[in-house]
Amino acid sequence: MRYSVVSAALLFAAAGILGGQSPAVGPGTEVRVWSAARNLSGYRATVASFALDTLTIGRGAGWLRAPVSSFDRVEIRVPRARGWGALRGAGFGALVGLAVGGLAAAQQISACPRTKELCGLNILFVPFGFLVGTPTGAVIGAVVPGKRWQLVAGH
Image (cartoon, rainbow, N blue to C red; front, side):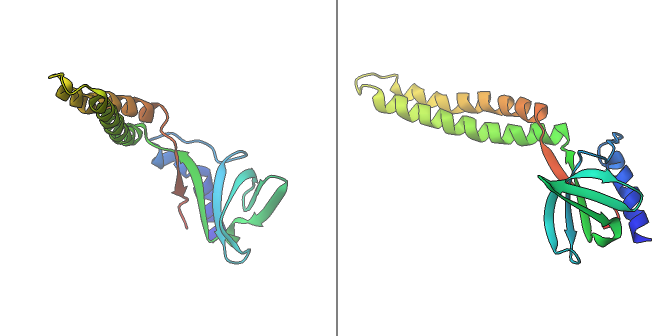
């Protein structure tokens, strides 16, 4: 019973998670498995084949063929949502922009002769870095959202 639930979940795992997209779980899918019986803890591998009740996974030259029921936990690698990627990218971009702007302002202020009255305006590099870094990070985060591990239902 358990392996049939896991088998069905492996075939249809990403359908609801990815908002209607249903990438097939088959050869080439990245998985992470746990099995007390086989002494596996977070074993990362690629699916070579998937039959009704048998999963063949491996990495490099070593392959493991085991009944699906022998795994305690199975996760598949799925793409992250673009919206969250943009939000996360905006946060990283803002931090990097603030840091770069702060460093640029500090360098310009330290190099400015004391006789100039406009040296204090170099501090404007900080908000400028923030204003450039935030949208740049958001665009990069949306275009390259990355991947995450999704627990397969039934585990």
